[in-house]
Length: 260
Length: 358
Image (cartoon, rainbow over all chains, first blue to last red):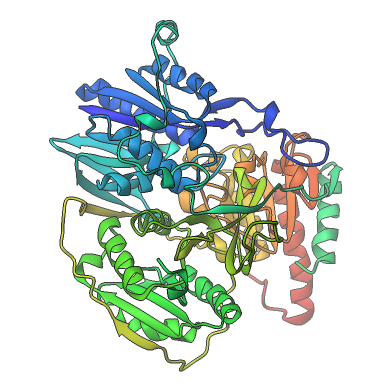
């Protein structure tokens, strides 16, 4: 079985968002990590590999430095890695990104494609389902459990108040939730090997069956009219009080605001 | 494609188990504003099996027209038949704008439909308006009028972007639940009802539903609560949530929680607030033992009043709190509850003596 896992390098926001004095986001101060949902997708692929045997290829699109997250994925146990990078691909929205990734995947053999549900920087959750459309294969999004059954996958798909157990014929695409699992650590041997292994680098010319008109900023139907870091509200009233003082203070505020 | 051929504001009227979801009414409310600005009308797209009766309800909340696709293939939500049906409607009727809820259904349906009809989709919008693109005239570039301007938070709510889709139609957005306002119900309102058959031909993309498992608990809709008492990891255990429940009961509110609490198995997923949970904007939000990672604050920072109780004075929750107490929640919460009950007791005694007698 061949599994392709799409991952994205994102700034780490977990518990450690840094702000500039003016209240805007200090992106430079944040580490670049594998997007958490994508890492869960990779872990899911590695578990399928452990259980059923599979070749796992990780694929990313990004700047040349995105090489780092591919090496991390290799150190966790992925077999091959591909970086799609090209100036003409920059500024892509989800449509152009999914077009690009689909163009790369068309060069590969695959039974299963796994993406994270959404990236913590863009939060769109669109690229996975859109790749499936470009490749004309079934998609199951919001996967919280994945099992194999012959030529099919059986997936628990999360909804707001229930989950569905779904069966899809492979090849298909699954988007993974970070709740799916706890990703493994890199192994020392894995880290050593990962830095010894070649990352395959592809550019525009390596994408299969894609039109220039659908790539990069120019190929993106959505255009940014305005973007700004949200300036946080002024800090509220913070008090350090003992229990009695805290209760008196809160009762005062709740009464003042007609809540009680 | 000629962009001016595309007319009308369409919404996907999501239903589950043949009951319309709130998001359908919220989308209708916003669609009505947009349609007024564009001098056009509002169409609700209703899909499912045995759901025709719901059309009047959509009319009561502002739909001028309802396109109904009623077919056994649509009994439960499955990506392919729903994408096929909505794509069919877009290709046949050519709407200018299509709004879909940013629910777990809509965020699956939306991307697939947008890819299939080759247009842009803006995810999880919190504001929609009609305006110019570019916002200000740029020399040598055509400024287009009457564009859908879609505003959305990204980066867990720390950045805000306004996005347009100037060269493709329809302009599509998924819209965050709990943000747009439904109009007041108009009893007896009627819409033009049109049935549409997109002809379902099952193919390899139709997945099989083997089982549907409901979450065991009775679900409370935390998005509808006026007061939320929300707990985080700092609450310490599932048992300790009893304190929060008591406080919520005293205030006539509901209990919600952070992701850490769901991950620890203390509370069910449908009570989770935040980026991977629900967005809430109650009148009062108590954040108790919640550190306040942006993934959490993204889901609650629009609350009118935020009251945070946390023993760690450096907790980021204090950055968004209206009132913050650095202190021991285990002592403060039960004591506060007691005082609120007393305060209510006094009012109850003066007005209605029996209300608090047990």
